[in-house]
Length: 388
Image (cartoon, rainbow, N blue to C red; front, side, top):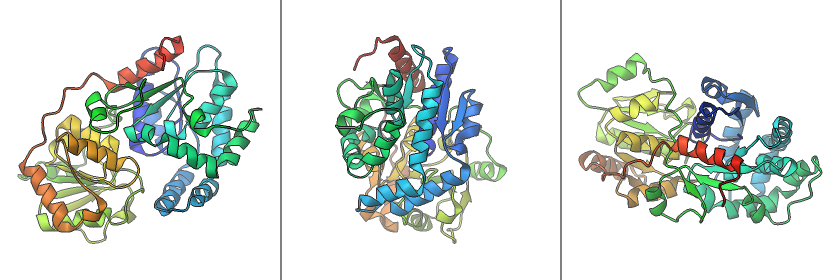
């Protein structure tokens, strides 16, 4: 399994890997060094594709160029952060670990280049696990981008293994043996549906095996007479620069206690409203069901955890898959969303008040354990009985 990104990307793969391990399979995850402890705690073999310093540098560099309209900036980001070397390393490691007739290669649709290359070299089946509908919706556009600015870099990695250049990038990126969506049917129906043949598993809660002990200060705040709000922009840096400023100014108007959970301290405003407390990390599994509402960026992991806890959500969603996630929640009556142009303190505060006063609509019951169903899909590909 190969996966890149932050918690919402990586931890669902760890959860699926843990289920595959429980079913008697050997499982290895290639991902960022930052996730070594999470992967090994699941009992899964771990291979780092970078160092901690390289991972933090990648997050920072991606944040700088995320809103660029010049596609050549994507190539420069690829080169600056050493992703060509990382791609070659991943390919070599996957091919080295291949066992004929007993290996399935698993990746994410938009970053599965090493998995697809290794699949061509070894003949092993390939499964792509999509964490959100956006990843399948945008695959043709990402294929076009790779063709325009990264074709030579990826073709060079292919040439190491005597593979010719990619001729049709969209067809190549759609060439996995199976595509699995880690979201439920109702979420799929709330927006553009997944392509025919996509197996939907339900949400995968990547933090189900994470520690649940809260620090004493957080526990004290949660035991107060007024349950606090939770404000978070996830574990990465790919946010509008005014995300936390907009949220904290709304908190100042609301005069409601809040927990601000942000891994990177430099993203947090220096002066916080009275009653707002910053934490670098808190276990959401133990936290989300105990807060009054979650104000967040629209990341799929936070969406899924808040839904599981039946906690009201206000989404300040911009960039990547987040606006689509927010629109699907709003269309289903399960969340309130504000587009970036409307992030005024008053508008955000009004949405939070509405979320507190009017609980979300009832949601359909889960179709089963998403991680188990995803593991079954991967396992079935190995037997050759799952067809696209």
